[in-house]
Amino acid sequence: MPLFKKSSKAYSIFYLKCPRCHEGETFGTGSWSFVRPFDMEKRCSKCNLNYFPEPGYYYGAMFISYIWTGWFCLLFIAIFNWLLGLSQAVSFGLLGLFLVLNFVYIFRISRLMWININVKYNPHAIKNHETEKAG
Image (cartoon, rainbow, N blue to C red):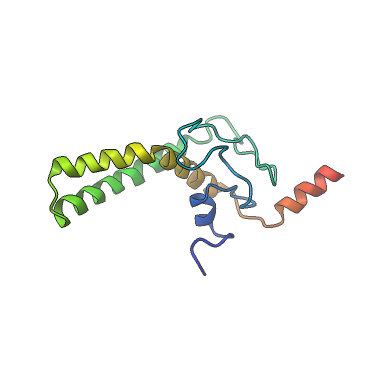
């Protein structure tokens, strides 16, 4: 079973797709876009999933981002400083550059991790939404 196949949570998270149908986009711009970096779509264009079910819903995503960014930073410095033998200044400089270039993607991945905790994949969600619209 591949990690990034369409029905997996990893697919939805890393490709920034709707957690229910895995087809709709969650953000209107590309993964590393600095144009409207924090503007998330209100609903899925394919299955009509509400991405904002309640006020403050993504508050928990902030903790996810903090935890995995913290661990990533520790591992990054350990690898570049201890294993590759670069100085601390160079290691922290590279880490800073990496985080500046990827902060939008980190923000978006954290939101998708959070919503994927609560929403289950449903391959029939698009058909159900089309049936509701027609009827």
